[in-house]
Amino acid sequence: MTEWSEIQSKVGTEIGVSDWILVDQAMIDQFADVTKDRQYIHVDQDAARETPFGGTIAHGFLTLSLLTHMIEDVALFPPKMVAAINQGMDRVRFLSPVHSGEEVRGCFVLDDIEDKRSGRWKFVYRVRVEIKGTARPALTARWLSLVVTEPEGSTSFGAAR
Image 1 (cartoon, rainbow, N blue to C red):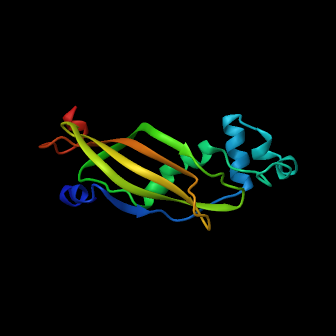
Image 2 (cartoon, rainbow, N blue to C red):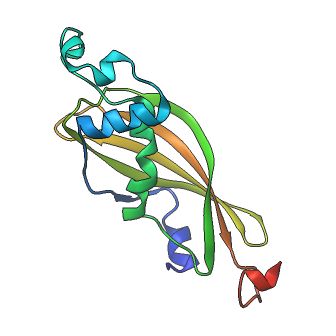
């Protein structure tokens, strides 16, 4: 847990960079199976070699979905936090393909914190997913998250209901 004063002092700054994650063909294939998106540029290595990509690439949504794991390395958890709920993304841009076998990491800037009501806070992150050894990022976005804390004076979340 991080004190509120420390969290609020981080608004407008980079809060951290995640560890690198290998995006290999097995991960891409599993994502294709789960989402039913088996377009050849993702799963057919022979056909994908004949494209301008020169091989298979990860789904943009696979790269985007890795953000939930990446933020675990850098997240700021306020006192008495009971949940962080994904509210969505703004301005998602897929800028560079992630080739099978490349590593990616997330860079997170805490753009804003908004007090929504007792025990509810909207955190806005500016995120960038970098590809190891490449200058241009895989994606950029603004990520909205609702952080729920125990209401003031409560001893447990269940008691506040």
